[in-house]
Length: 411
Ligand code: B12
Ligand code: SF4
Ligand code: SF4
Image (tube, rainbow, N blue to C red; front, side, top):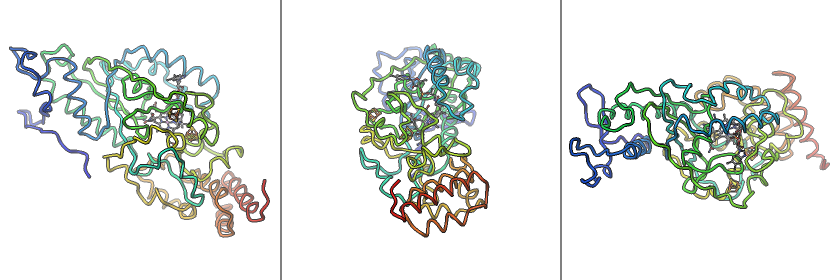
């Protein structure tokens, strides 16, 4: 199903297309309309409503608005410094960089006044509420749900660009409003691609509240969505944040296999399976290997258990559809991938990020955690001394785990 259900786009004289205002704006009571200008846009809020409807037509679940000068950036800098001081970032060196831009996002895009924060839902199937069924199939390789299809960064940025072009085409309609539409239009889309506080921006712009697992969630859509931003030069009023609805729940903290959520709203990234399997290069500390279970790329446990994900939406964006059976592959099937298979099957996929040998490392750990089987041991042995000492170390660990299970010794 295509998500690009185009709004009504009449031709304009310059050959560009401009979207007509949505029906509800055409029905604005006549007393609100400027007599000199019969535009249905009587305020900046009308412009925001129009942009929101265009964003939804482009496949975004929702959007919110926030000034580039919002006080949250200074507050977040203090919290980020505390987080870094605790060493939670592991090898995520980029978290130390470009702090001046994080503190002043107006410097990231010269002339930008407003950030449009968007969410894009990515589930292609609704998981059973409040259960982590992924762990019931120890011989299957679990890949985080956001990563089973096409890399969302490209999809997100190309749709944000489309949104920007639709906004640009409407500028002549908004000249009578004091929102800066007469000036040169500047825009830039981002998603996970710039030193910005994406989750706190979305929180402040009313897209949801920050859960105790540190992800954003809301009552209508749960948390299985990714975030993106469109910086624009129009000056639009801030949206208001929503109230938190975590209450006394602590399900995400309790379920986390590696206890990476060290306190509500505080994540030790270096202990998180998502970090270990995607971002961490080299040896994975033995203390985490059993807890990693069968997760070979990312982790969804703290979201699967969250009661609000009962309301998680199914995506309308076909790019998230799983490729190469990545929603249903046995560990041994994935283990058989040669480097050329990995390169071919991960083209345009988030899986590319971890690299082939680290991907094998993750599968080796998962095979160590799989049901005891002589076949698994044979397959593990077949890859010894084929890549590097780091991989061999994990293979030896996995073989020892398998032998322990087959000999019935409980360690
Ligand atoms: C680094 C990073 C990671 C790291 C660290 C995650 C983290 N929580 O910090 C790792 C690799 C572990 C990771 C994992 C995942 N990530 Co990530 N990640 C990022 C990234 C690039 C930066 C996040 C960041 O700045 N962390 C630094 C710390 C300091 O920030 P923080 O957690 O927000 O911490 C703040 C709060 O603790 C807050 N705080 C302190 N006390 C209190 C008290 C209250 C009441 C509140 C409200 C807040 C609060 O202050 C801290 C400082 O700002 C963002 C994209 C971006 N540019 O923002 C994506 C992002 C957060 N990740 C995302 C996703 C999808 C994931 C995974 C689900 C992927 C997966 N399935 O494997 C997991 C989830 C793990 C988890 N529970 O968070 C999405 C989240 C979407 C959403 N719904 O919120 C983002 C926004 C990417 C995107 N564009 O969509 N990620
Ligand atoms: S993604 Fe997994 S390991 Fe990371 S905090 Fe959530 S449950 Fe824990
Ligand atoms: S599991 Fe509970 S505490 Fe965690 S984010 Fe969901 S509602 Fe909040």
